[in-house]
Length: 482
Image (cartoon, rainbow, N blue to C red; front, side, top):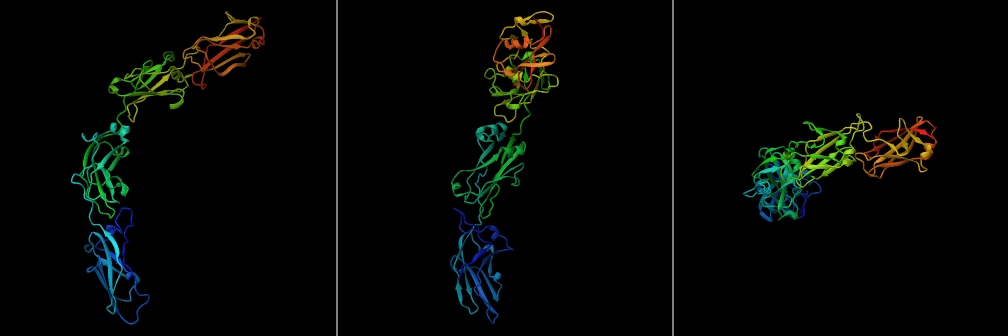
């Protein structure tokens, strides 16, 4: 006769797993025992009757080892062809179910077997079942921010699971991170173990995100193992740890040596005090000897902008002073009182995930005409100054500006003249390439074109921020003479 089967059906077979494994839910409910299902053996109802038949289910090819029987009267509903088997008749191990059907004329017929695996034994943890934490954590049973910050640890605490009896394909490990041990607050669950996991060291990770979410304090780490049949081990012996991983109060802000600094973490810099750059100072009390410290000076344009520099190393190894180049300082000089640009300055210590408190620096604008005055070599000093058309060389008049504070090659320049309300540009946003006195030409045709005894004014300005804004030099008014 056709082999029986079970309801519920066995779990799907997996590589390395038991054949036709029954989940414990298939047999563990006394009010809903396992059913050994049988294929109806009559196509039509039998005439006459009533007829009585009997089915005996036996185990492992032993017809004497009957684990369930059922007698019924024909006809039967097709859904009623089954024999309930109680859990106490289902021993652990791999077994076969077969049955003998004795029909209404007392003739027996034996079925083919059906193989199942029954596993009633939960995983048994090691006598010392505590998770094995890294030596940097145990002792002193403390997880610190420094441990998680170390790139070698990958922002996690990786523990080792002691061997248990017996490790099988399909086992699932669930671990817990709790304020009191109980196996209620699930930290994470492993995927089912595969064939390649058998015989290897099993590891349980506690991620930095999990640990930070759970805050500081005393915590307990435990785990359980559930096999593929659904049998659950006891809870492991807890490991008690002290956790101190929340970001600490930020270290005190740095200061700028050349600025006027306030106790609240702000500073104001006179632009003439930063012509050689400025010095950021980190208080020695805020860091430990040997700590690696770098400074970020974040201004115009953000982290990658012209007014910013990141990762500045100390002037001397192990020192607490950091040099910020003049060009970076200059890009953050305000152009006027309405200009709101500011600089944020902070430092990093080692691999800490959080920088120090922020120091905010404001660099005051230059006073009017503070950078110097436009000069003309061909001009005659007077009140007003004059320029003779006859004295202007064929190559043009020379406009000079003496070297100014923060001068650097590549800064953009504007040079122009105003006459009778009309502007004439000689340079417009053009980068200069000098380190010293700046010179450009005022075309002879321009001077020759001015009316005798009229006045025109020469102007110039320079940009410290790549052309976003300009600072003016003092202009020069010239009266045109023959």
